[in-house]
Every structure is written in C-alpha cells, then in structure tokens.
View 1: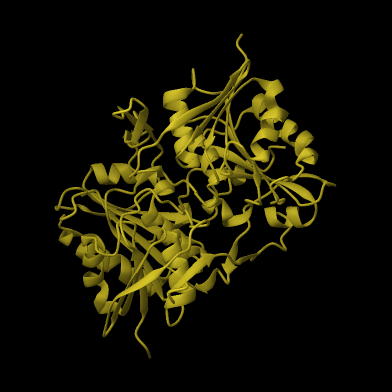
View 2 (view 1 turned 90 degrees about the vertical axis):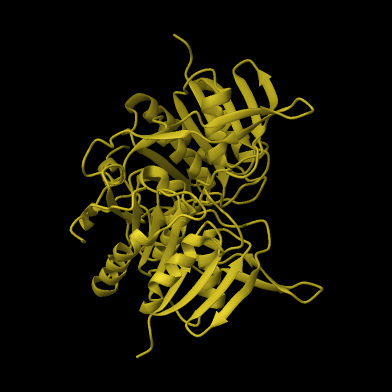
Length: 248
Length: 248
C-alpha cells in the first residue's frame, strides 16, 4: 500500500517557520506535498484570485517532500494543488502552524482556516493548526505531541464529511491538555490607526483589539486558550441557521 | 424619532448597477450610507487588508444619501464605516445586489456575504442580496417586492443576534415566491484554465463549474433557484459542529 499523501499549506508563506516545523513533525506519517503562498497572506479568509493570473513555482523536490510556492491566496493554493499539482487526491490536508491565534469568530478572517475549509469542501479531512505565538522565530515544539495526537486520531477515526478542525495552542509552553471547544463570540474594537501622508491625505492601518464576548464560558475556545489548554474547535461547512426556517 | 440608518456595501464596487439599484429600492426606509469598494472585489470572502494602508473617498453627499468608496475589501468597508464614517451604529446593513449567485457553500468565498457576516459580528441585522444575473447592466427590478418584504420583515421582527440572511434570486424575472432554505453542499471542478505567456511560462486563470451535491433536495437554496424561487438562507456566525464534542 502506498504511503498517505498529505497536502500542507498556510497563510504565512511557504518559507515561514510554522509550516516548516509542521512538515518536519508530520513527515513520518506520509509523503508531504506543500503548496503555500509565496509570502504572507494574513487575513485572506477564503478569498480567491478572480482578476489576476495565478502562478506556481517548484521550490524543492526530494524523496517524500515536494514544495511549491504560489502567488495566490491560501484557498488558491488548495485549488491549484488538487487540480494541477498533486499526483492524486490527498488523504489529509493540514494548514499552519500559523504564527498567531485563529480561535473564536476569527476563523472567518483566517487564511489558515481558509485552507482547511476549502479542503473540507473538496471532501478531504483537514486540520488547521495555529499558535498564539506570533514571532517569526517562535518555538512550536510544545505543540508536537498534540499535533501528533490530533493527526493520528483523524487518520484513525476520520472526520464527518463536511467538518474540519481548528486547533489553537496558547502562548505558554506548559499546556494543561487538550479540549474540544465551541467557537467563542467576540468583537474587534479600535480597528483603525489613522495616519497622515506627507501630502496631507488621511490613510488607515487595520489593527484593533479583540475581546471574546462569552469567553468566561468553559466550553469556548478562548477560555481553553486563556487557561492553558490546546483548543480543538470542530468547524462545519454548513452555516445554515436551522432554527430560522419559519422566518418568512 | 430619527430615521433608521442603513449602511450598504457590496463586492462589485460603489458604482455597480446592483448597489445603486438597491440604494434606490430601500431609500424610503431611512438614511442611506454607502461605503463600498472602489472597484470589483469578487471572491474577497471576509478577507481584510493587513499589509496595505486603507483609504476612503467621499463620492456624494446629499439629503439622506452619503456615498464613500474605499480601496479595501468589502469587510474593510464595514469596519471603516462603523468606526470612522457613520454618525452612529446603523440599524441595518445591506449588501449587494450582487451581479452573480452567492448561494450554496459559495457563501464562504463571497464578498457580498462577507459584508453581511462582518455586520452580524458587530451585532447589527444584516442581509446580503444577490442575483443569478451576472451582466453589468442586468435588470433587478423583479427583486424589488422581495427585497422590500425581507427588509420590512427584518425591521419588524429583527434577526437572532448572530445570524444574517443570504437572499438569492434566480435568473428569471418570473419568481414563483420566496422560500427559507438551507445552504446547498457542492463542489467546483475544472477550476483552472492554463495559458502560456509569450516567454513560455505557464499561468492559470481561476474559473470552473459548480455543481450542487444535494441540490435535488427541496430544502436547499440551489433547488429554490433552479425552480424559480427567491432563496432566503439564514447564515450563522457560529460554525461549531456541536455533534463533534466527543471527538477526543
């Protein structure tokens, strides 16, 4: 039997530490195929490139590891990999390790989770890994046994067809364990930092601070992160609010 | 009592026919504030602009109607409107009318629905309107009574706090009525069209065809569209798969 084929992407770019650490951690599970953006694409969500041509570049090819970069979005990378680059449909799609938290409603903005959701839409088991550590040289070593456990569990049990996993690790290196969580509600405030150009026009940088609205509840992913647990949040493709069917 | 304040955005740009038709249709309900991209942003999803400065430009200001364009994404437009442009929190956020269908799992790629989801995240009632008609000069007149009905219903009953509406109209102008629907599962195939540059390198345009996997089921939004109904799909912010809590 051939080895499992694992596609890996991210939104920090193919040369980020997080994705290279992830490749190294899961290489023992199969043949690794990386198709990742050629630079940072934070906040890309599930955006796709409709108005520009998309190109790929072979970065490395060795026994069990192939790496391509792509000038598109994280979601483009998955689409390109499936149709043009992978030798067959992969057995698993991983994303990350993202330099920065993708918990709570921030899944909606996340390019890391865009990869997982796109793969899920293509019917393949998918997991996004993120860490609250943002530094480009962050150590993700403490996540290794948790990543191994989640990957092994998914290989063993599979995931429901239209569900993927969002795994977030807290800032600390001393995790208390791993918890299944729900998505925390929350909101961003002070989102724009105003500047003036030398010619006097006003422009803005997107910034802001996020606070979880219900993060005091022990079932939320923010609570888990705030209390030293690795949060595993199962994410459904189907966003329908079935309680609303009598609205009209 | 002051008039309701309605924020309107889209992903086709502030000068698209769809958004101007929508403004005209709902102007009677309140003061209209448009903050929309300065050009097309199809497929922008909930992407946000992290690496470039964002700017806005006042296009028009008259009694009851203010229009700004913005160089960012649809989601940026909402964030900018709420924090920097609107005189107060709006009573309703509308998006569209999009030139093109945003039904089924395509909500995940949709900039139109990105507007509605972002507004929903900010705790305001929000509705995205899309038509299967793609042409830039399409007539959306047949949607008028349906848009009025949905807007009036939302003003009257409100929406659950973390839910927004995705309203899609079929290609025809003879609608059979309006139905509450669930999101259709589906997949894209033949997504890349390959070309060669004059210098011989390969590039790709994103394209493809979508087919609903379960569109034969009468409760799906694709079924409604295929059978001449306006589809109203309630979309939840919370993507948690609560059936998965025993995964670990």
